[in-house]
Image (tube, rainbow, N blue to C red):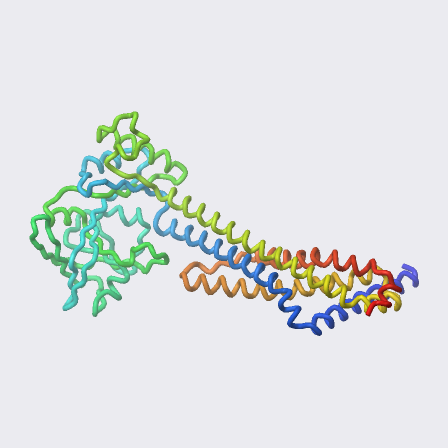
Length: 411
Protein backbone atom coordinates (compact mmCIF):
# COMPACT_ATOMS: atom_id res chain seq x y z
CA UNK A 1 0.00 0.00 0.00
CA UNK A 2 1.43 3.38 -1.01
CA UNK A 3 1.84 6.32 1.35
CA UNK A 4 -0.87 8.17 -0.57
CA UNK A 5 -3.34 5.31 -0.10
CA UNK A 6 -2.50 5.06 3.61
CA UNK A 7 -3.00 8.81 3.98
CA UNK A 8 -6.36 8.60 2.19
CA UNK A 9 -7.42 5.72 4.45
CA UNK A 10 -6.47 7.64 7.59
CA UNK A 11 -8.32 10.68 6.26
CA UNK A 12 -11.51 8.66 5.68
CA UNK A 13 -11.25 7.18 9.17
CA UNK A 14 -10.88 10.65 10.66
CA UNK A 15 -13.90 11.80 8.66
CA UNK A 16 -15.92 8.86 9.99
CA UNK A 17 -14.91 9.60 13.59
CA UNK A 18 -15.73 13.25 13.04
CA UNK A 19 -19.12 12.29 11.56
CA UNK A 20 -19.83 10.17 14.62
CA UNK A 21 -18.93 13.04 16.96
CA UNK A 22 -21.13 15.48 15.03
CA UNK A 23 -24.02 12.97 15.06
CA UNK A 24 -23.70 12.42 18.82
CA UNK A 25 -23.50 16.18 19.39
CA UNK A 26 -26.66 16.71 17.35
CA UNK A 27 -28.51 14.04 19.36
CA UNK A 28 -27.33 15.47 22.70
CA UNK A 29 -28.37 18.99 21.70
CA UNK A 30 -31.97 17.84 21.24
CA UNK A 31 -32.34 15.13 23.88
CA UNK A 32 -36.12 15.27 24.25
CA UNK A 33 -36.68 15.19 20.49
CA UNK A 34 -34.28 12.26 20.18
CA UNK A 35 -36.07 10.33 22.95
CA UNK A 36 -39.49 10.92 21.41
CA UNK A 37 -38.13 9.97 17.99
CA UNK A 38 -36.90 6.60 19.23
CA UNK A 39 -40.09 5.84 21.16
CA UNK A 40 -41.62 3.93 18.25
CA UNK A 41 -38.47 1.80 17.95
CA UNK A 42 -38.43 1.19 21.72
CA UNK A 43 -42.07 0.05 21.76
CA UNK A 44 -41.67 -2.08 18.64
CA UNK A 45 -38.51 -3.89 19.78
CA UNK A 46 -39.85 -4.35 23.33
CA UNK A 47 -43.12 -5.77 22.01
CA UNK A 48 -41.38 -8.16 19.58
CA UNK A 49 -39.00 -9.50 22.24
CA UNK A 50 -41.70 -9.75 24.92
CA UNK A 51 -44.12 -11.53 22.58
CA UNK A 52 -41.53 -13.98 21.26
CA UNK A 53 -40.28 -14.72 24.79
CA UNK A 54 -43.80 -15.26 26.13
CA UNK A 55 -44.62 -17.46 23.14
CA UNK A 56 -41.54 -19.59 23.83
CA UNK A 57 -42.48 -19.69 27.51
CA UNK A 58 -46.02 -20.88 26.73
CA UNK A 59 -44.66 -23.55 24.38
CA UNK A 60 -42.30 -24.75 27.11
CA UNK A 61 -45.21 -24.76 29.55
CA UNK A 62 -47.24 -26.94 27.18
CA UNK A 63 -44.27 -29.28 26.71
CA UNK A 64 -43.80 -29.56 30.49
CA UNK A 65 -47.52 -30.14 30.92
CA UNK A 66 -47.36 -32.88 28.29
CA UNK A 67 -44.55 -34.63 30.15
CA UNK A 68 -46.14 -34.26 33.58
CA UNK A 69 -49.73 -35.10 32.65
CA UNK A 70 -48.91 -37.65 29.95
CA UNK A 71 -49.30 -36.73 26.31
CA UNK A 72 -50.41 -40.12 24.96
CA UNK A 73 -53.60 -40.78 26.87
CA UNK A 74 -57.18 -41.04 25.66
CA UNK A 75 -60.17 -39.90 27.71
CA UNK A 76 -63.58 -41.55 27.31
CA UNK A 77 -66.35 -39.79 29.22
CA UNK A 78 -69.93 -40.96 29.44
CA UNK A 79 -72.70 -38.47 28.78
CA UNK A 80 -74.41 -40.09 31.76
CA UNK A 81 -72.35 -40.48 34.97
CA UNK A 82 -73.21 -44.20 35.35
CA UNK A 83 -72.78 -45.27 31.70
CA UNK A 84 -69.70 -47.46 32.01
CA UNK A 85 -69.08 -50.75 33.82
CA UNK A 86 -66.34 -53.39 33.90
CA UNK A 87 -67.36 -54.68 30.45
CA UNK A 88 -66.56 -51.36 28.78
CA UNK A 89 -63.27 -51.10 30.67
CA UNK A 90 -62.23 -54.55 29.44
CA UNK A 91 -63.30 -53.68 25.88
CA UNK A 92 -61.07 -50.59 25.87
CA UNK A 93 -58.21 -52.37 27.63
CA UNK A 94 -58.23 -55.13 24.97
CA UNK A 95 -58.03 -52.66 22.08
CA UNK A 96 -54.72 -52.90 20.15
CA UNK A 97 -52.47 -49.99 21.10
CA UNK A 98 -53.88 -49.58 24.63
CA UNK A 99 -51.31 -50.38 27.33
CA UNK A 100 -53.15 -49.26 30.46
CA UNK A 101 -56.50 -47.97 31.67
CA UNK A 102 -57.99 -46.53 34.82
CA UNK A 103 -61.57 -45.57 35.64
CA UNK A 104 -62.24 -42.14 37.10
CA UNK A 105 -65.12 -41.84 39.51
CA UNK A 106 -65.51 -38.44 41.16
CA UNK A 107 -67.53 -37.87 44.33
CA UNK A 108 -67.90 -34.78 46.48
CA UNK A 109 -67.18 -35.70 50.10
CA UNK A 110 -66.54 -34.23 53.54
CA UNK A 111 -62.97 -34.83 54.69
CA UNK A 112 -62.14 -34.51 58.39
CA UNK A 113 -58.68 -34.35 59.94
CA UNK A 114 -58.62 -33.72 63.69
CA UNK A 115 -61.14 -30.90 64.25
CA UNK A 116 -61.12 -29.50 60.70
CA UNK A 117 -63.60 -30.57 58.03
CA UNK A 118 -63.38 -29.59 54.38
CA UNK A 119 -65.55 -30.47 51.40
CA UNK A 120 -63.48 -31.66 48.46
CA UNK A 121 -63.56 -34.06 45.54
CA UNK A 122 -62.52 -37.67 46.03
CA UNK A 123 -61.49 -39.71 43.00
CA UNK A 124 -61.80 -43.44 42.69
CA UNK A 125 -58.98 -44.84 40.53
CA UNK A 126 -56.91 -47.98 40.11
CA UNK A 127 -53.16 -48.53 40.33
CA UNK A 128 -52.58 -47.63 36.64
CA UNK A 129 -53.25 -43.94 37.38
CA UNK A 130 -49.66 -43.54 38.59
CA UNK A 131 -48.24 -44.35 35.17
CA UNK A 132 -51.08 -42.77 33.20
CA UNK A 133 -50.65 -39.39 34.92
CA UNK A 134 -46.87 -39.48 35.55
CA UNK A 135 -47.53 -38.85 39.25
CA UNK A 136 -44.48 -38.61 41.49
CA UNK A 137 -44.71 -39.12 45.26
CA UNK A 138 -42.79 -37.05 47.79
CA UNK A 139 -43.48 -39.60 50.51
CA UNK A 140 -45.01 -43.02 50.95
CA UNK A 141 -46.24 -45.44 48.30
CA UNK A 142 -48.92 -45.44 45.64
CA UNK A 143 -52.22 -47.31 45.57
CA UNK A 144 -52.37 -50.88 44.35
CA UNK A 145 -55.41 -52.93 43.49
CA UNK A 146 -55.16 -54.92 46.75
CA UNK A 147 -55.63 -51.80 48.87
CA UNK A 148 -58.97 -50.94 50.43
CA UNK A 149 -59.24 -48.12 52.98
CA UNK A 150 -56.10 -46.23 52.01
CA UNK A 151 -55.61 -42.95 50.18
CA UNK A 152 -53.00 -40.96 48.29
CA UNK A 153 -53.40 -37.20 48.71
CA UNK A 154 -52.16 -34.12 46.86
CA UNK A 155 -49.43 -31.81 48.16
CA UNK A 156 -51.86 -28.98 49.00
CA UNK A 157 -54.25 -31.34 50.80
CA UNK A 158 -51.36 -32.54 52.99
CA UNK A 159 -49.80 -29.15 53.66
CA UNK A 160 -52.34 -26.33 53.28
CA UNK A 161 -55.92 -27.56 53.41
CA UNK A 162 -56.19 -28.34 57.12
CA UNK A 163 -55.01 -26.74 60.36
CA UNK A 164 -52.40 -29.46 60.79
CA UNK A 165 -50.17 -31.04 58.19
CA UNK A 166 -51.05 -34.56 57.14
CA UNK A 167 -48.28 -37.14 57.00
CA UNK A 168 -48.17 -40.69 55.70
CA UNK A 169 -49.61 -43.22 58.15
CA UNK A 170 -52.00 -40.54 59.49
CA UNK A 171 -55.71 -41.24 59.19
CA UNK A 172 -58.48 -39.06 57.76
CA UNK A 173 -62.25 -39.54 57.89
CA UNK A 174 -64.16 -39.26 54.62
CA UNK A 175 -67.95 -38.90 54.68
CA UNK A 176 -69.83 -39.89 51.50
CA UNK A 177 -73.48 -39.25 50.66
CA UNK A 178 -75.30 -42.09 48.91
CA UNK A 179 -78.12 -41.73 46.40
CA UNK A 180 -80.69 -42.79 49.01
CA UNK A 181 -79.77 -39.82 51.20
CA UNK A 182 -77.65 -41.65 53.77
CA UNK A 183 -74.19 -40.60 54.92
CA UNK A 184 -71.37 -43.10 55.30
CA UNK A 185 -68.11 -42.22 57.06
CA UNK A 186 -65.00 -44.33 56.60
CA UNK A 187 -61.52 -43.99 58.03
CA UNK A 188 -58.67 -43.97 55.49
CA UNK A 189 -54.95 -44.28 56.14
CA UNK A 190 -52.74 -41.93 54.13
CA UNK A 191 -50.46 -44.20 52.12
CA UNK A 192 -48.73 -41.58 50.00
CA UNK A 193 -48.39 -37.84 49.37
CA UNK A 194 -48.04 -36.53 45.83
CA UNK A 195 -45.09 -34.31 45.00
CA UNK A 196 -45.84 -30.62 44.39
CA UNK A 197 -46.82 -30.18 40.75
CA UNK A 198 -44.75 -27.92 38.51
CA UNK A 199 -47.91 -27.16 36.54
CA UNK A 200 -51.36 -26.11 37.65
CA UNK A 201 -53.48 -29.03 36.44
CA UNK A 202 -55.20 -29.86 39.72
CA UNK A 203 -53.10 -32.76 41.01
CA UNK A 204 -52.11 -30.83 44.17
CA UNK A 205 -55.69 -30.78 45.44
CA UNK A 206 -56.81 -34.38 44.93
CA UNK A 207 -57.69 -37.29 47.18
CA UNK A 208 -57.33 -40.67 45.47
CA UNK A 209 -58.81 -43.90 46.79
CA UNK A 210 -59.29 -47.34 45.19
CA UNK A 211 -62.28 -47.21 42.84
CA UNK A 212 -63.42 -50.62 44.09
CA UNK A 213 -63.64 -49.20 47.62
CA UNK A 214 -65.59 -46.17 46.43
CA UNK A 215 -68.10 -48.32 44.55
CA UNK A 216 -68.48 -50.61 47.58
CA UNK A 217 -69.21 -47.66 49.89
CA UNK A 218 -71.75 -46.17 47.47
CA UNK A 219 -73.31 -49.52 46.57
CA UNK A 220 -72.56 -48.98 42.88
CA UNK A 221 -70.59 -50.71 40.14
CA UNK A 222 -70.36 -48.03 37.46
CA UNK A 223 -67.83 -45.48 36.24
CA UNK A 224 -68.17 -42.08 34.64
CA UNK A 225 -64.85 -41.73 32.84
CA UNK A 226 -61.92 -43.82 31.62
CA UNK A 227 -58.39 -42.69 30.97
CA UNK A 228 -56.48 -45.08 28.71
CA UNK A 229 -52.84 -44.93 27.64
CA UNK A 230 -51.79 -45.41 24.04
CA UNK A 231 -48.56 -47.28 23.40
CA UNK A 232 -47.20 -44.36 21.37
CA UNK A 233 -47.96 -40.72 20.71
CA UNK A 234 -47.35 -41.40 17.00
CA UNK A 235 -50.24 -43.87 16.84
CA UNK A 236 -52.61 -42.24 19.33
CA UNK A 237 -55.06 -41.05 16.65
CA UNK A 238 -55.37 -44.54 15.15
CA UNK A 239 -55.81 -46.05 18.61
CA UNK A 240 -58.39 -43.39 19.49
CA UNK A 241 -60.37 -44.23 16.33
CA UNK A 242 -60.25 -47.97 17.06
CA UNK A 243 -61.52 -47.46 20.62
CA UNK A 244 -64.28 -45.24 19.22
CA UNK A 245 -65.35 -47.90 16.68
CA UNK A 246 -65.45 -50.65 19.29
CA UNK A 247 -67.44 -48.60 21.79
CA UNK A 248 -69.87 -47.41 19.10
CA UNK A 249 -70.56 -51.02 18.04
CA UNK A 250 -70.87 -52.03 21.70
CA UNK A 251 -73.54 -49.38 22.31
CA UNK A 252 -75.35 -50.12 19.04
CA UNK A 253 -74.49 -46.90 17.21
CA UNK A 254 -75.26 -47.38 13.47
CA UNK A 255 -72.24 -47.28 11.15
CA UNK A 256 -73.74 -44.33 9.28
CA UNK A 257 -73.69 -42.30 12.52
CA UNK A 258 -70.05 -43.00 13.41
CA UNK A 259 -69.07 -39.41 12.60
CA UNK A 260 -72.09 -37.99 14.43
CA UNK A 261 -71.00 -37.25 18.01
CA UNK A 262 -74.61 -36.63 19.08
CA UNK A 263 -75.50 -40.24 18.23
CA UNK A 264 -72.96 -41.63 20.71
CA UNK A 265 -73.59 -41.88 24.47
CA UNK A 266 -70.01 -40.80 25.24
CA UNK A 267 -67.36 -38.21 24.42
CA UNK A 268 -63.80 -38.97 23.36
CA UNK A 269 -60.67 -36.84 23.35
CA UNK A 270 -56.95 -37.33 23.55
CA UNK A 271 -54.21 -35.26 25.09
CA UNK A 272 -52.32 -34.91 21.81
CA UNK A 273 -55.32 -33.07 20.31
CA UNK A 274 -55.53 -30.73 23.31
CA UNK A 275 -51.84 -29.87 23.11
CA UNK A 276 -52.09 -29.36 19.35
CA UNK A 277 -54.97 -26.92 19.78
CA UNK A 278 -53.13 -25.06 22.53
CA UNK A 279 -50.03 -24.80 20.34
CA UNK A 280 -52.13 -23.51 17.42
CA UNK A 281 -53.80 -20.88 19.59
CA UNK A 282 -50.42 -19.86 20.99
CA UNK A 283 -48.96 -19.62 17.48
CA UNK A 284 -51.82 -17.52 16.10
CA UNK A 285 -51.81 -15.21 19.12
CA UNK A 286 -48.03 -14.86 18.94
CA UNK A 287 -48.15 -14.06 15.22
CA UNK A 288 -50.88 -11.48 15.78
CA UNK A 289 -49.04 -9.73 18.60
CA UNK A 290 -45.74 -9.84 16.69
CA UNK A 291 -47.49 -8.28 13.67
CA UNK A 292 -48.69 -5.43 15.87
CA UNK A 293 -45.15 -5.04 17.20
CA UNK A 294 -43.73 -4.93 13.67
CA UNK A 295 -46.23 -2.22 12.78
CA UNK A 296 -44.92 -0.25 15.75
CA UNK A 297 -41.40 -0.71 14.35
CA UNK A 298 -42.51 0.59 10.96
CA UNK A 299 -44.17 3.59 12.61
CA UNK A 300 -40.95 4.14 14.54
CA UNK A 301 -38.91 4.08 11.34
CA UNK A 302 -41.23 6.64 9.78
CA UNK A 303 -40.75 8.81 12.86
CA UNK A 304 -36.97 8.61 12.48
CA UNK A 305 -37.18 9.43 8.77
CA UNK A 306 -39.44 12.39 9.48
CA UNK A 307 -37.20 13.84 12.17
CA UNK A 308 -34.11 13.31 10.02
CA UNK A 309 -35.75 15.26 7.18
CA UNK A 310 -36.48 18.06 9.64
CA UNK A 311 -32.86 17.88 10.84
CA UNK A 312 -31.54 18.15 7.27
CA UNK A 313 -33.66 21.26 6.69
CA UNK A 314 -32.56 22.83 9.98
CA UNK A 315 -28.88 22.13 9.31
CA UNK A 316 -28.71 23.13 5.66
CA UNK A 317 -26.17 25.91 6.33
CA UNK A 318 -24.09 23.50 8.47
CA UNK A 319 -24.05 21.06 5.54
CA UNK A 320 -22.76 23.83 3.27
CA UNK A 321 -19.98 24.68 5.75
CA UNK A 322 -18.95 21.02 6.04
CA UNK A 323 -18.80 20.66 2.27
CA UNK A 324 -16.73 23.83 1.98
CA UNK A 325 -14.31 22.33 4.54
CA UNK A 326 -13.76 19.27 2.35
CA UNK A 327 -16.60 16.91 3.27
CA UNK A 328 -17.58 14.88 0.22
CA UNK A 329 -21.13 13.82 -0.62
CA UNK A 330 -20.25 10.43 0.87
CA UNK A 331 -19.06 12.05 4.10
CA UNK A 332 -22.31 14.02 4.44
CA UNK A 333 -24.35 10.92 3.58
CA UNK A 334 -22.47 8.98 6.23
CA UNK A 335 -22.99 11.76 8.79
CA UNK A 336 -26.79 11.55 8.66
CA UNK A 337 -26.95 7.77 8.29
CA UNK A 338 -24.75 7.43 11.39
CA UNK A 339 -27.09 9.77 13.29
CA UNK A 340 -30.11 7.71 12.21
CA UNK A 341 -28.42 4.44 13.19
CA UNK A 342 -27.34 5.84 16.58
CA UNK A 343 -30.96 6.76 17.30
CA UNK A 344 -32.07 3.25 16.31
CA UNK A 345 -29.34 1.57 18.36
CA UNK A 346 -30.38 3.61 21.39
CA UNK A 347 -34.03 2.66 20.82
CA UNK A 348 -33.08 -0.97 20.18
CA UNK A 349 -31.05 -1.26 23.39
CA UNK A 350 -33.77 0.37 25.48
CA UNK A 351 -36.46 -1.72 23.77
CA UNK A 352 -34.48 -4.91 24.34
CA UNK A 353 -34.12 -4.14 28.03
CA UNK A 354 -37.81 -3.31 28.40
CA UNK A 355 -38.87 -6.37 26.40
CA UNK A 356 -36.76 -8.75 28.49
CA UNK A 357 -37.91 -7.12 31.74
CA UNK A 358 -41.56 -7.17 30.67
CA UNK A 359 -41.42 -10.81 29.56
CA UNK A 360 -39.67 -11.83 32.78
CA UNK A 361 -42.29 -10.04 34.88
CA UNK A 362 -45.15 -11.67 32.96
CA UNK A 363 -43.55 -15.11 33.20
CA UNK A 364 -43.10 -14.73 36.96
CA UNK A 365 -46.65 -13.41 37.41
CA UNK A 366 -48.21 -16.27 35.42
CA UNK A 367 -45.80 -18.84 36.89
CA UNK A 368 -44.51 -19.81 33.47
CA UNK A 369 -41.07 -21.25 32.67
CA UNK A 370 -38.44 -18.52 32.31
CA UNK A 371 -37.48 -18.69 28.62
CA UNK A 372 -35.61 -16.10 26.55
CA UNK A 373 -34.78 -17.10 22.95
CA UNK A 374 -31.40 -15.35 22.58
CA UNK A 375 -31.45 -15.61 18.78
CA UNK A 376 -34.74 -13.73 18.57
CA UNK A 377 -33.48 -11.06 20.97
CA UNK A 378 -30.45 -10.55 18.70
CA UNK A 379 -32.73 -10.51 15.65
CA UNK A 380 -35.01 -7.92 17.28
CA UNK A 381 -32.08 -5.63 18.04
CA UNK A 382 -30.59 -6.15 14.56
CA UNK A 383 -33.91 -5.29 12.94
CA UNK A 384 -33.98 -2.01 14.87
CA UNK A 385 -30.53 -1.11 13.49
CA UNK A 386 -31.60 -2.03 9.95
CA UNK A 387 -34.75 0.05 10.38
CA UNK A 388 -32.59 3.01 11.38
CA UNK A 389 -30.34 2.50 8.37
CA UNK A 390 -33.26 2.36 5.95
CA UNK A 391 -35.02 5.32 7.59
CA UNK A 392 -31.86 7.42 7.33
CA UNK A 393 -30.99 6.73 3.70
CA UNK A 394 -33.45 9.16 2.04
CA UNK A 395 -32.79 12.15 4.35
CA UNK A 396 -29.04 11.49 4.20
CA UNK A 397 -29.11 11.28 0.40
CA UNK A 398 -31.05 14.53 0.27
CA UNK A 399 -28.40 16.21 2.43
CA UNK A 400 -25.52 14.78 0.38
CA UNK A 401 -26.94 16.10 -2.90
CA UNK A 402 -27.21 19.68 -1.66
CA UNK A 403 -25.33 22.30 -3.63
CA UNK A 404 -22.61 23.81 -1.44
CA UNK A 405 -23.26 27.42 -2.49
CA UNK A 406 -27.04 27.12 -2.08
CA UNK A 407 -26.57 25.50 1.33
CA UNK A 408 -24.26 28.33 2.50
CA UNK A 409 -26.84 30.94 1.43
CA UNK A 410 -29.49 29.27 3.60
CA UNK A 411 -30.49 31.00 6.83
